[in-house]
Length: 495
Image 1 (cartoon, rainbow, N blue to C red):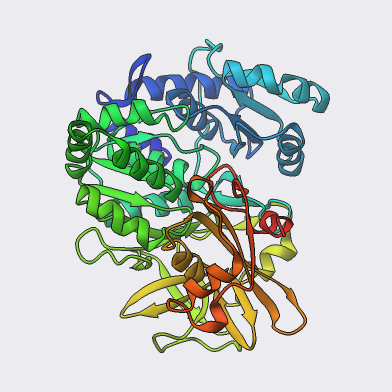
Image 2: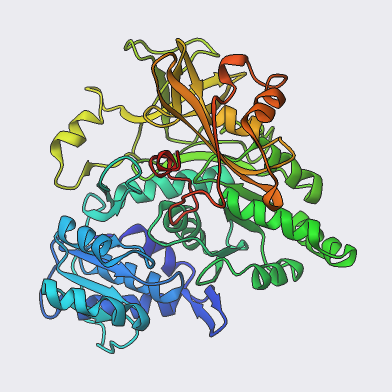
């Protein structure tokens, strides 16, 4: 029986370097050997883990991938958990998934050991094992591969179940759309309990035979030094990182800025995702580096679904068109398929990339799908001149005020043009007159003062009157999750 796709692909690049870290280089063959040994350790004499759930707690790098491949090759289901999560959050993921073991690097193993002891879970140090590779089970792509917990911004996190076939489809679509090559080189500093790091960077790079430079976190000085050295051909990050990079370029001495700009300019592709990219950031990055960021749209349940083109117009504020193999449609709140442009509807997605189920939650799974297999994303969008533009979440980013449906993301983009505003989050708060009042939480630049009357006056020449904020709170920082995405329920507490 053929091997699982990532393993078969890795054999074709056996002698190539898969990872570079400060500790040295790791080849694809070394990953294969280590993963086979770890699989034997996990099996502990059994023939097949039979989809037993195994949590993975480790930073990005060769150890993480060896562990991931090892538990897959043993027939297990990977449950990535967040390095920086609290013990109650770890306990929720471990108990909800029914995990039987935890694979961790040495530092993480020490932190989670008391919880594993309390829950009676087997704890395996990724770095400490030395079992010789043994006989491994034969597996099919239809087997469950991963339970990835959503960010839980609106409720308790749900475990999104994907098979090996789903993961292969998600990766193959991006390989085609973004033209990944074995010669590509990319930094990896994104959390490895999120689809951005797992699929878009690690999955695609290793499928293509490319080289990853792994960082435990976003180490800006180290990464910029490598950019100057032309170390990368691709770069993928979240909007907050691009904001930090813009600030670094603007603050750099002329010679340093020129060297960094040249390094960024020579990359063949730079991608932004996981949160909406403000048009002002998109345009400023192009002004500084000549690079037009490629924005895309996806989520844990579907991988990536929409993307601006590799070759063609990359439109600020838009997320492009459906990716290869992915079907996308809009559906109105009245249940009609939206055919016209400039008419909002819920994004619905169908294809081999779409997940199987929410773990242990059949009712939530059923509610998330139409009868004909279309997944209901809960995101609103419109098509404008052929490109999709995200309006926001049905639950938190669509504000119903005075009979209008307003996009919080549109209002946020306008507010970011204000010279005193560094960051902002817009929500709707209950209001007896308007239904919901447009309310803005902002972080000002250098602690500048900003009052509601002045902000409203500034907005009136840029936004329709019914979109202008009616409430304002100035804060030192906005609440964010591990991916840097603003958590709107927590923003409500600021008011």
